[in-house]
Length: 415
Image 1: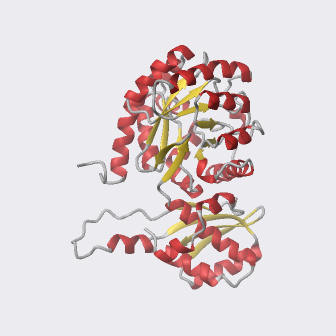
Image 2: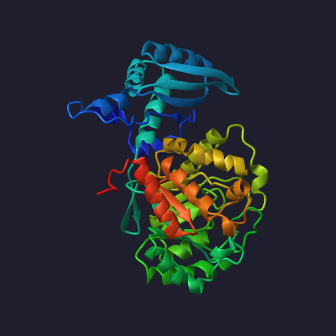
Image 3: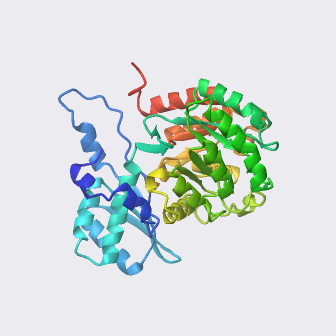
């Protein structure tokens, strides 16, 4: 809950995404409404509690000269901060309520441009963190995101997906897609190249030959949006021509410089996933100075690539890339602290389905990771995921719905 003054002062979502946040601001902890039932004569309790609850906001590599003045201003409004040296200056973790952040911004309005920008960065990241509803234009079909978790069904038109049960030829894709929609899928994701760790790339033409016929058949048989899972511009163009209305790029526009232009020209949304390196060598890149901060920074860079390609901010989604250039423990950390990605102000997509981190915990092969996937999906929804990408649609639709009902304390879920 935010005050009218805070809402009026905040920049637009477009400004939030276009500004790449020079200090990688992100919320590492925030107020969670207290589960108190109060009499009807106390209607404003939760508004007051939310306004004065403390948030922890991290700022990286702040210049020492502006850090000192910023901390003095923060102290004057009653906030506090922890600071420690970093390679490019000072890292700060700011502890403040929304009214204190507003007061801090007001205090610094007449200060230097750098200080004003730092204060605006704090205001903007809190605005992003609090955003809960989004709308995606999928080829003229509006997809509401945030009211409830969306389930994306995975259709792998590949012979070498890590999960044997998901491998399917393009001829059977339509039947599987229909089954998934009947089981509760909100959209479908069709891929023609395995991106599991250690997999090898296939040519664009081979990928097109796998996905384009499947997508064309699917669009004639289901009403939900179809996504194409690709990092190649020619594949995306062919898939869109066949009826795809979303692009899911596991390489976050870092692999093919032409892909962003294809997406922008088509006016379709794009999912930007975090990874590092090629599929063959990505696990060698699972070395981070600060896991969550590095992922946020690199996703912001992906959002910047999208913006420069002409893709509107409201057409972007982010995915932390569970299992991609991440060890099993790092994947667990990402799921546990997924709420930090709300700082990007974009819908959050996760794909934990039957992945190896579950196998590391349970000691089980992909075929026996259904229950582990269920736990991961529930945890992801509770910590902020707006969309879950899964193989087992019916089970995960149920798990996501119950997790969302718990998160919202039943509002909108129980008649």
